[in-house]
Length: 329
Image 1: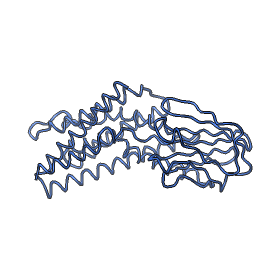
Image 2 (image 1 turned 90 degrees about the vertical axis):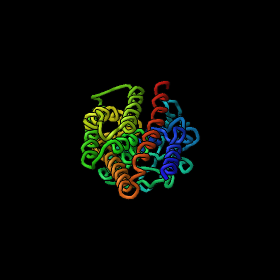
Image 3 (image 1 turned 30 degrees about the vertical axis):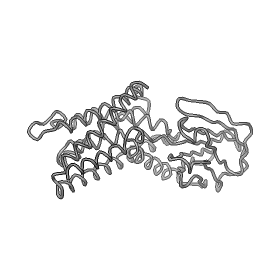
Image 4 (image 1 turned 120 degrees about the horizontal axis):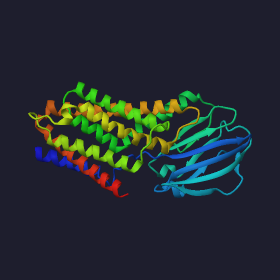
């Protein structure tokens, strides 16, 4: 039975192989319409050069707007930027904005509409809903809801952060110890997330991403080598380990948030709700992992250690791939 159980977990690990699971997967497309003068708008459309949208996507502009010139395209890092000048007659309220071919992708699109004399709107397009109707929303609830959802998605789809939290749960024993350690991780990554986003802290992204992968490898090794009668450093002082590595993960969160962008005038609210969303997703991961471990202890205690070992090996192998990839990139 143990052998078949291990095979199942290996298959699960292969399903999350480097070819299918990429760290920091959250890189949504981004559309911004800014009113420069009454009726005169500029449109910025950004998408990853590695995505289908970057090369074939097209913005669906409001029906009462017309382009005044040909779109200007340029490369900026790993993104393709498209700029367009628009002339719009009347209000945009009740008009539609969207993204062609979004339904063929797996990413979302963040839309910002910034009029001169009214509240900015922040909308979210998905493959299931690639077009949205512009209304007159409450800016507070609109920004808060959008960035909370983005934060939840980032921790659930940013596999390196997810693996780190999962490895912590595998390593530690007892819900209270896990809670304290995850809290230390939360406090640490919140510090660097806020500091980096506000421009107080800065580190090059490539070495940070490489060390984040290395931190996951470290925890995976600790899980595999853990012994009941010989507690390792990470088991004796888990909150210190989590805090130190959490500082680095905060730079990773900040990098993703920089890719998404923050609404001018509502940076504190967007930052707060993004971080809140990250914590909601993180608590969901911890809850599910603890529930599965509890079920194994109660009903299949002989499967518990093989499950931990195989999962740790899977996490370590994938993280090693990420580490090498980031070092040579």
